[in-house]
Image 1 (cartoon, rainbow, N blue to C red):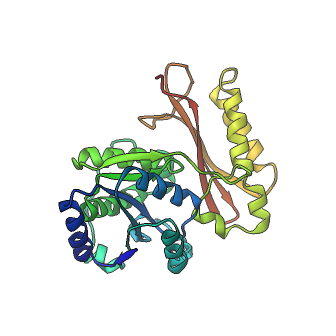
Image 2: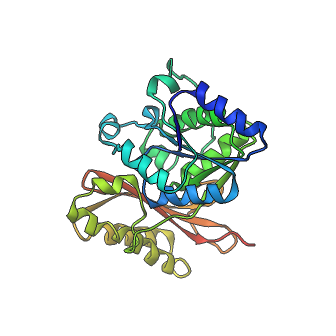
Image 3: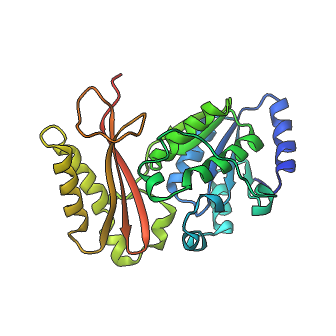
Length: 284
């Protein structure tokens, strides 16, 4: 496995592979790798001959500087995991490499970045777009892989690829869950034992909400979610929204004709967890 820290060296190596007819797959991460990330890498290796994983904690997508400071980092452990999975290339730049000067670009995603995560984390998705566009330019991958746990982010990255006319194919991969249903996340390692025990209630509540879709109003489902999540006293609901799967716009009523996904953000102590569940699938 080769590790690069500069865009120049990364591009030189990838150009050699590209000239030899290799297909390049890319998995962007912020490190603190877990089985969810590794599942993306396996899909990447399955569909491409060269796999690239980036490890970079991007400062411009954190509206809470304390959250940036506390974000888990363990580069050596991450590399050990990637070696075990036979990753070909790791790109691990310093902040000054990705941001030699302030990035003042502003991206227009319409209303897609104004709801849910965008509403509660102002500027977050603009920061995501800044770093993902820089990484796409550096790697020029044939395919890039993102987890569906970050449902809104995936939709916005698809829009970014469209706006930027990137040839990279964006591939969404299913949420990977712990045995008790908790969606895998790097933030899970920050949970206390007490909060970790309570956290599976998030997915359990989403499943209960899905069972109510055919027979209850959205307002009734939302009220149930808040009661269920907060009844243990260890979790606090930040938001619960049922949205149109493609546009991300909030649905006031649910019909079988409109693909719908429920999205949720919950605080377990000071740790913020997100999850989502498809309620009404796209018709095949």
